[in-house]
Length: 556
Ligand code: NAD
Image 1: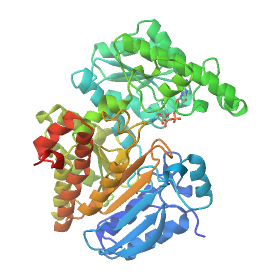
Image 2 (image 1 turned 135 degrees about the horizontal axis):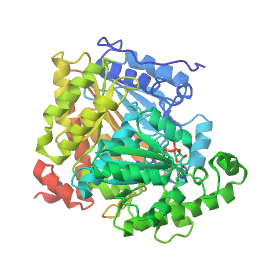
Image 3 (image 1 turned 180 degrees about the vertical axis):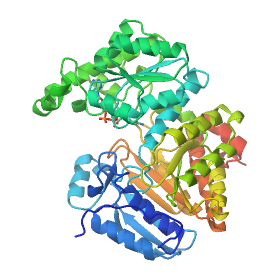
């Protein structure tokens, strides 16, 4: 049995595999396990709890070996992180096909999944762990930036300048909130009960400063907002007390959300419990702790609803806070919406989603050049969306530290992703870039996921749990020439709660790659248009009509 060892993708413009698509898959598999990128590389865990890149080290070695020898008319099949076959296909076919963590409906529970995992039969692939296109925390920062940009567009004329956002939770993902708010020009007050979380975010440059009291936090925030100066302030406290207190004082808060770890009641600090006692109390008396945490969450949500009644923009950030408050008997918990129906769905209707790319050269200058290309392709004066895109690209260039191979992410829509991809391919062909570019995306995209608690919450026609769409999405990408395609179960929200698909396409500068990119990067976001037209969204109908997306039921 092979064992753990440090893994790092080779850099540079000379492949060891028999073609760039195979080399790209190999380097991206290795990059996912780079200690700079992966959370627990020794256990092959990339991110998101137990999201893995390979089932075990023998499978990793077999996949690496196979990718090195794989021909341009062959396809490797991966079943939950384990290579199970190589088939003769053709040069337009994906070089790798991946299916991770899929279970038959009645068996789709965490208990059954863990039982099968212990038997060595399956692997949890999360979204981009098992499909080899994770790029570190930049993805979380950008997603959070995009959400706050959508809040600004919906309510505040395109910028958060002059507004104050109140939130809590400065953990692994929630820690992106203060920087995402300031990148949108706003002021954030962020409550966390763990002093280390506050210090860590300041250390990483995600949080500007800390205040010693709610009074001081409010004073700093109102001064900065008054001057339309971006600022983020961390303050130590329990959100279930701080949020009601700020409401009672009539604090001038414009936006309220939360990213405490409310999805797990044993990880939410109840009122009246000191933070240092929290872990032992949760371990020793989990039922009592859960009841108190839920009761506190009800007070927290009640205050958020109070801010809603007072006219603030209030949304749930996908952490189940509303659901837990409802379990504690708070009747108005679902008065405010989740972030997808509130802000992201209109973007999905336009085929917008998380477009990301990676420089196989390992040279940050390749990302700088592609950043400039994106700014040129989508001039900021042309639309509010382009303006927000340009702001992100510039700030990301200054603030984002690369993990592993240099990478970039930004949200692009239908009719944009293909332009960017073709431009990158031309830049590889002309020698402007030192090596090929890998183009992929998160599975959290417009037409690639069925997830009723998140991406497909509250669909207009009630089709939240219909999972044909991600399967069609994967098949379309296979038929269009993607370099590798994956179908996963359970990413983001857990086993039994989602099905989703991913594609990755390699721009190696060849004419064939250009043809594939044009089709994949049109059809992949095209699935978002089709899915949302089908669910009855007029915004998607308008984009389909304007862009000539063919809809058989509207023809003839
Ligand atoms: P984490 O566990 O790393 O951090 C949670 C933070 O909340 C900790 O710093 C903890 O000290 C703090 N906290 C707990 N109880 C508190 C209380 N009562 N008052 C103040 N602070 C409290 O978690 P994370 O990775 O940052 O994720 C946070 C939550 O957001 C999770 O529930 C996650 O599922 C959710 N999330 C959703 C999305 C999405 O849907 N797009 C994205 C990111 C995170």
